[in-house]
Every structure is written in C-alpha cells, then in structure tokens.
Amino acid sequence: MPDADLDFLDILSQKQREERFEQGIPSSEMRKKQLLKLKRLLTEREKDLADALHADLGKPAFESFSSEIAVLLNEIDYVCKHLAGWNRPRRSRHLKLGVIEVFRKKRQPYGSVLIIGSWNYPVQLTLMPVIGAIAGGNSCVIKPSEYAPASAGLLEEIINQAFPRDQLLVVNGDAQVASRLTSAPFDLIFFTGSTRTGRLVADQAAKRLTPTILELGGKNPCILDETGFSSAAVRDIVWGKFLNAGQTCIAPDTLFVHESVYEQTLSEIAAALSAFYGERPQASPDYGRICTDAHFDKMVDLLGQGTIRFGGQHDRSDRFVAPTVLTDIRPGSPVSEEEIFGPVLPVVPYADFETLLSGGDLQRDALTGYLFSTNKQRIQRFDDYMRSSTVSVNQVIHHAASPHIAFGGVGRSGYGAYHGRAGFLAFSYEKTNVRTYHYLRFPGKFPPYSDRNLNALKKLRKRLL
Image (tube, rainbow, N blue to C red; front, side, top):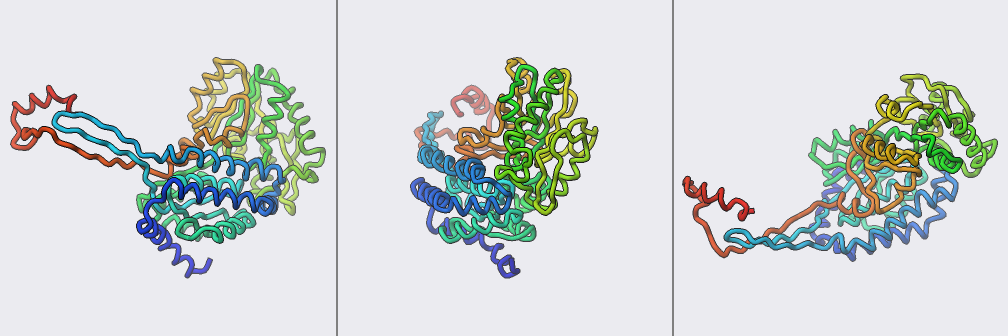
C-alpha cells in the first residue's frame, strides 16, 4: 500500500467516529439490515469464496462451505433473531432514603473498530467478529491476512463495493499496514492470530489505552482413555486434527492415549487416514495444503522430532505435508512444547490419568481441552483441571461453530470472547442513565460533619444503597 494511503489510515477511524456522531447510533433494525446485506453477499459469492479458499489453502468445497460460509450464515441468522432483545434498554427503580432512583441501562457501541483476521480460516475468522461488531452498532476497518491473498482480495472487492466506508472498509496490505492500523486511534481492536503477534498488537494498543480482544492459539490436549476408545472416537479425532490440513486453532494438538488401547488407537488412526484420504493423500481432492512456504518448512522440521508412524511425505512445490503421526516424541522438542498448527499428530501413551494431569505435559490455558471418556469422575476432574474457556467431551471442533457458546481464550490463548450474544457484548459496553427524584433532603450529608450524623448514617446504611 502506498505511503499516501497509509496516511489516510491514520484519520480513517476518526472519520468513522464523526459519521457515527452525526448520524447517531444505528437502531437494531439498521444493524439487521447490514447483517442481512452481508448474508446476501456471502450467498451470492459463495462459489467465488470457495475458489479463493481453494487457491489459498487447497480447501475442498465441502470444507469451505461447512467450516467457513455456513458458520457465518448461521451466526447472522442467530444474531438477527435475538438482536432486538439484546439491544433493548433495561429499566429499574430503587427506593432509597429521601430519593427514588431510576436506572436505564443500555448497550453502547465502542465506535470505530479495527478487526485483524487470520489466514487459516480467512473468510470465517475475518467476518465472524464483523458480525459481532455490526450487532454492537460499530463501524469497522477490516484487515484480512496477507498470507491468504486470494481471500483477502475478494473480501476487499465484496465489502468495499457493497458498504459505505463509514460502515465497513477492508484494507489490505502487509505487516507495515497492520502496524500502522494498530497505532491509529481506534476505539477497539480485535485480533486473531499467533500469540507472538498478539503481544505486539496489545503493546501497540496499550500506548493509546485502546481495549483489545485477542483470539490466539493453544496446544489443545486431547485425551483418549480406555473407556472412551472406539473406532468412531478415533475417526472424530483424526477428522478434527487434519481438517484444513491441521491449520485449525482448536484442533487436537497432541493425542494422549491410555497404554491399554495405545496400539489399537494407532491402528484405527491408520485406517481412518486411509479411508479419508486414500493411500496417496497428495492426490486426494479432500485434503488441503499448507498456507505458506515458511509454515511448510516449520512442519517439515517437526517431522524429525519423533518416529514417523504414518505419513511424513512432503512436497514444497505443492506446499503438501501428508497427514503424519509421530510417536516416541523427543522430550523438550518443539513438537512437544509448541503449538503445532499443522498436519502432524503426536500420539503419546500414558499409564495413569492423575499422573498425566500432574506431569506438566498439558497446556491448561489452551483454547480448549478434549477428553474421550465415559468415566464421570475423570470428566469432572478434567473439567476442573483445564483453565480453557471450553472443555469438550467425546467430540472435537463442533462446539466452535455454535452461536450459543462464547468462543475465546484464557491466558496464553488470549482474552475476550465472541460468537452469538457474547459477540454483541464484546463489541459494546454498558451505559447507565441515572435519574434521581428527591422526596426528602438531608442536610446532614454536607460538611461540617458531626458524630450524631455519623451514627445516623451507620443505622441507615442499608437504606442508602
């Protein structure tokens, strides 16, 4: 992006804020109209979006629709159904000594919001927070990831042609553009991406005391105990791990298997991989590709940090890394300590559930934790152990598509949550109008104070609240 355009970015949020001031806060109906326009665009350009996702990530059309477009359509439907109720002011009356107070509480938009999307689900993770921002009554500047250029370019075309810039504007560019945007005077910044970049965004925003919502990554543990083992359970885990070639922030990162079903699990994984992608996954139309050359190189480095039980093939010219299962993981290696975010699944045996939890191998504040088990005590113990915002039992991935569940991180996996009502709340704040009607006045509250008035205050304390 030219320097002149970068200068424009510095004043863009102020222009959006001024437009909001002149036009007033949009009503629930106006917000619904914007959301329905976005829904119509997604429907009309579904084929173009699928083509862009295939160009960026090799996504099959089924995954493009199910994990990106359908999730957005369902979110818009849910938000439009409930928005008027969420946005309705709440009134209450409180009788106190000498006064009647009337409270009117309503949700107020932050104003001009910056949304920075991610490359692994470049349509869904860019537009999902936009839905929450619109529901909250905000205007948005949207920065898609430059690592998914086909999707980013199409989003710029679709959004900028359909919406006035005082409502929504897509700005494309590299890290320099993102840095300039995060230093501009936005009222809220929403970022989806890596923990490392999230820290930079938070540091930049802190200089202006700009509130941030960070949706980061996590080394999501997945435990399969002897009571939860089945062919169906393993198929679900394999599907969730290798969806989008493993480039999913809530994918099972490492699979911990009870030693009594360890070899059976490995056999079932091999059978599932063969059933899903055939004997030559590179030729499968249902298996995606690594997004960038740099991320491809990282995945290939991980292959040497354990024993390759299945897979391991790779082709840099095609950014292809086969679905790979690693065993005998080297202690202290990056594959055991860092988020993998790709099609490499370490499978680690364990002997005792409590020892596994206390051993320090599980990231407690990951985005989510998975447990396949029918043991109620273990399920409760795992729920208590994890500090993540969700714990999922006997399924993977699906919970993140539900508008009924707040999606967000804790600790290293970020902070703030969205989806459904949580998104409406995330992109607005509570504003209270307090009206007071006096029916009796007490001069004793003014200086000079006296012991008599202090004693009276202590006796009447509860009637003052």
